[in-house]
Amino acid sequence: MVKTHAEESLGANPGDAALNPADSVAMGVRASRSSTRVDPASAGSFRALRHSAFRLLFISFLINQTGFWVSHISLQGMMVQLSDNDTFKNGLLFFVLFLPAFLLAPLSGVAADRFDRKRIMITSYLGVSSACLVLAVATGSGWMTANGLLVIAFAMGVSFTFAGPASMAIAANSVTREDLPSAIAMQSVANNLTRVMGPLLAAPLVFSGQFQFAFILYMFAGLTAAFLTSRMRVSDYVPDVQESGIFTRMARGLSHARERHPALPALVSVAFLSIFGVSHTVLLPSFASETLGDASYFPWIAAATGLGAMGGALRAGRVGARTTYGRAAMGMVAYGAAMAVFSMSTNLWLTLVAQFIIGFFYFSVMTRLQTLIQQIVEENLRGRVMSLFQVCWAGTIPFGSLAMGYAAGILGTPMTLLASSLVCIFYGLVAMGLAFIWRRQSAG
Image (cartoon, rainbow, N blue to C red):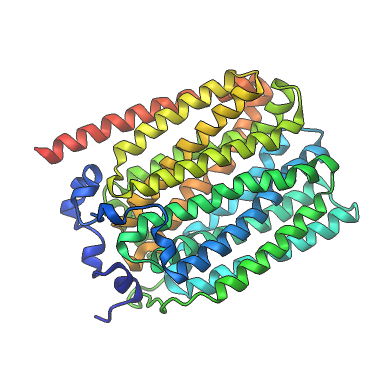
């Protein structure tokens, strides 16, 4: 069998890149003792940056995500303006933006395993840039309506969906095996650093209502990211030509996730945290205006979340060798506790601190879970399994956001946030119990 670039970059054959099904339980509870072991000296957060291909990927991701967050905050601000701060409309914006991740992510995973991953990313960047151009022209001309904003947000979501699995897979292709935890962490760091910079850059545009400039900025960011990605030099990925049929390929990805325990429980945890955790961001504008009394606090709250998330991703990258399902479950409990404090806060500084902690544990948990999954999947199925990760992460956000927006209209924003936090705590405790049982079983 011809060795693919992925096998070369991982320094192993597919059998070394993932455990056999008989060894899967041990992987779930003792990741550092299995074939996923990494040299502690090489588990530093920044190790992936020593690879030139990953440096280009990181810079392009950083630029693109900065534009995304400027645009994302502006999209929310614009919907608030167009809908008179209707929480259901705000939830609907999140719904259409992330709905493609639910509907199309399995297909995008097949594409990432079948076609050139770099070209998929470039095409996605260009698609987003085109949507931003339309947004900028329509907004600057005064033609934009709430319904028009929803249509363009859906188109942007399609581009995000196809970029996701390709981006996660190519990150693994651009580093060696021991630097994989660092690569995943650094992608999260880029995302969360921009969660700080983006809202701060967007704040004056939101205050002044000059949303078209935010969309122009994102357009140029996407074009720059496409150019940098085109300069990446990674060996061609050799797809598995023995498989045929889209549905067969999609089913094989799900089957593989079931075989590589605890990939499936990890995916379920991602979905739970997205529905009851990250979806709470749809309520941040109303929380700022109704609870704190000033809608202008919204970008600062978002920035605090991003700052904490960056720290959480860095921390998870440094302890990549000790990534286990149980540790991720403990982080979910801490996340829920911080969210409970946030829901009851009426003070800006307490709110910012609570959101910092929320961001820290959210991306710490997500980075750990993604690292765990990436370490145990086979290369020729990586795109499809990571598309399941995207379904569970981004694909569930539209439903959680829509539900939270609707519930807030009935229960109020603080009570909705408190209820969601309790669900996160309960699920985290259950997951900790399962991890303990699996550890006892593997020890016996």
